[in-house]
Figure 1 (tube, chains in turn brown, purple):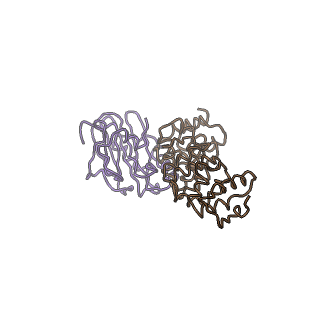
Figure 2 (cartoon, chains in turn orange, red):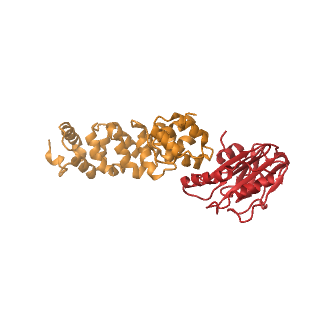
Figure 3 (cartoon, chains in turn brown, cyan):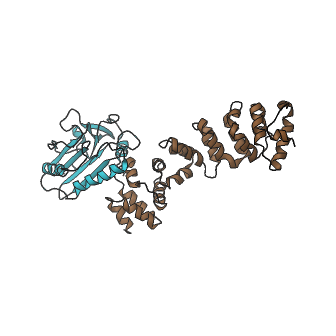
Length: 243
Length: 184
């Protein structure tokens, strides 16, 4: 194994002619658990096309280490490879790094459909894109996530009391899911005044809605939280008292 | 006001949501029913940015209006009593409100801060009271009681528009109910 290469020293190397040798060096190093980050970075810096072939080409090594090593210099690969294909291929090679790839590419590509679709491969589809974009554009992001079918991700955040995700579920028209999300949020200790926030988009007639929520609550803490915000809602208070 | 919209039933009142992500922050609705008469109200407590503060203020306002029960007397007196219940309540500088009382003689309607009142005609909103009209005045509770419009009847539903966003004339009634937060 060429120690100089592993250290990132490619002096005198013709990447076009010796890429196969380099690839074998990377394979051996990965097999031995050696650090390949300097070598990968050096190849990409020296010749991004050769680097793209090494880390994302048809014969690329399916290795978390290799993809991880490429992440700091992905912007160089983006200049020579179509980005949607690049990230899709890297996700194929290292599925455990999908969230990292999404986070890394977010500053440049978060408006792109392929970026959102990449998140569809996560264990909870859409969760990283949702988390990233929710901070940037809270009003529009949950609906975008729902457009891609990431209902579970939106529901999970809504169940933590995120009012934007709650509203998206409401606007999506699934009343049952909305009631379930509200009750989950209250049971999970959400401190938002969910009655007030719901009224701010749904209107002041929220009593029967929250009465339904009250009947779904699983915890005494959730019931106490709802009781604290149910002033002026007689049906809800009655439901909390067991009707 | 078009005669074709008039109905002789207790009327429903609502205000159309405002533009923005929290279109009904600070919106309120309520009603009181008595023997042979009915009082209803709807509006916005103000331009409150914080929906939680706005909600709490609407509770105070609704409590003021509803807790003493339905006023006695004819529909005109009902309006006078209802307006007087807001005396001394803080933060009504931006109040938008429509108030109606209905009895066997017809309806009395009073409002502040509205740019128009709309009924439903053939499934769409149609102006019931057009500006300029004494009923359509500036926001905020005035020192003198707002005037009242007396009529034999009114549309089953009246939608108040505070002038924000597009003129709702022609809006499908289904959208108007949704925009106002009136759910089946």
